[in-house]
Image 1 (tube, one colour):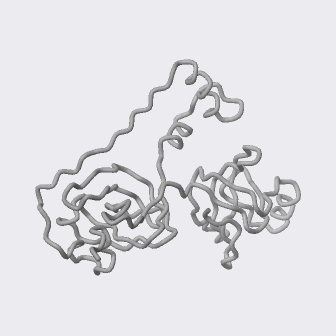
Image 2 (cartoon, helix red, strand yellow):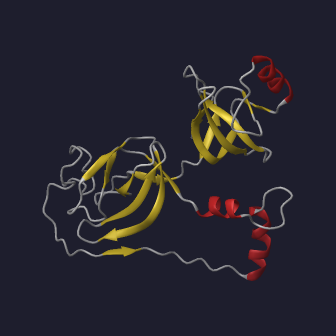
Image 3 (cartoon, rainbow, N blue to C red):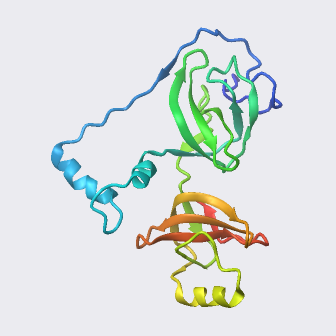
Length: 228
């Protein structure tokens, strides 16, 4: 059976990403989808993008709208070049990682695959990856911007938490609780809060639109929210 041209993940970092020689002159065409909406549809749609109480779309809100995330569904290679023939592997993208699309998708004619330039949310590594191989194997799917609460936690206004235990207890008593099963939309990706050792994420609670910071992982490894 013919293997997918994009499945070069088994090669060590620094080695050529494709074992088979291919035409280096292959063009990579940018795929563009144009969606036309009538004026009345735009009038109805625009308010749904506004945050509660806002009359205009903030730069931060616009940025969230245009960002595209993809979830790795099958281990594959992140390479340093758009064309597979000319690439070297930077590292492997593991299943369940999330990447942000920075450029593309672009069609590589020689390998008959779609390629995207991405940033891995885990470590900010940037490179090129293949959405699906030429035999149908899917490596990346659109999504990855949602988390599900697996252990009750709290939603706070700020990234940092009080170091004082009594202050933290009062905060827990007076702050909105985020219950198990609730779905969270990522606003800022999880990062460690150094003073507490907690991994924290800015998000919007899908059930009521509340926005704030939650702990996704405790300083002893306890999981509070996981990627959907």
